[in-house]
Length: 584
Image (cartoon, rainbow, N blue to C red; front, side, top):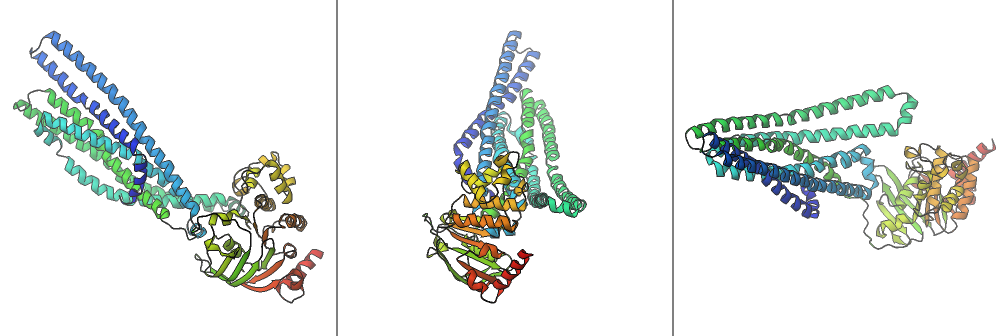
């Protein structure tokens, strides 16, 4: 139960509703337990009338009163039972809402490396399936536990008051029941964890299949993916069956024990009545009703125990991520404006998940309003520089300064709010094109959206769609071509009007003519903004104030376009190669 202690703060938050729910539960059970006494009393009246101990008139009057009491107590018990469910079950929905928000917010602050080492399907399973299991503990499990405890306490008090010895006989099977529950609960907890892990694997495979459906269809491997999915489904089914087999033992065991208790009541009660230890025959009927009233609560003990064990297994999985600390910590609380001066001083960085040394002793200085172009071979560390400026990772060695301050000392939200980032792999959300562009500035007007799209040279493409800017994109922007996605991403970045603009080879899917037009627009838009352009094309870099060439994480060349084409090296060779290709 240690994992479930995490929920105590929510129980405290909703303590008023829970206390009201407990009071309502007690009232409902008190009225419900009037029934056995009233039935017992009614049977005693019938017995007395058959033995001519009371008159016909008294018999009719008393029986009518008891019937009215029975109906009244049943109605009141029903009303309070309804209120009990409304109160406690509603609390579970509130806790579910709060817990999902807590997990989602924690996911947001976790570092990029966390998402590289954990699968999306597993993340989704923990915030959906696992939270659902926890909700069943907070709602039904707690409600039936309170219900069972209240019913047992009141019923046993009533039973002892009627016949202590018969009560003892009735409760004889309970110790055996507790041992069975304990044994089965441990097994359920173990198998519940296995089931949830299996569901995560299945969810991950499904998510990856749907995300990569175009690749699957292109390679014609649908039959293979179907076989793999069937294999995972079969494994999950078997694990679910193994769990169900254990859970299925509860109800038959409960019914058996209740049946035994009924037989004990009839036999022992009958013997006591014949021996004169019980005066009224109605007492036996009363005890039979008590036993049958306890049937469902006793039967739910197993179910509730199963819910608790499953909830604990799920909460352990949830806590595993909630207790994960982000690698990137926001130590500065006050928001600080960013001008855009950037300086790398002998910066080295190694990716923690792959142990690849991406940057080695990199140094450069970029003043606010200047443009830096970074070129180099694939895997030379170009994108890593942009990731470090956005503080998606922390450097290992050296010093990274923004406005002459250590980047680690800046407020993380101020830093990232001042950056407009266009990734190499443009990511668009399943929303309208307009909202995807406004993602950079939520309060942007339609005129600002159109202006940003025009500068990114994608306006004409958008108005060509049937619904224009209101066109809803498929998952990850699949509705658009690669070049269109890149240009929408550029529009999203420039509409924000940030102090720092980072372009990560974002024109690779655009033809050279369109690239030239976009670059001309960007020159006008980035006059007073610090801009870094990562590219493989000289055309994207030639107008930059400074150009650096990376190779294997090291700066091998630096300077302006003019100085670099006059110096033998990678840049000059690339320049002549691309120039000759263009002339062809």
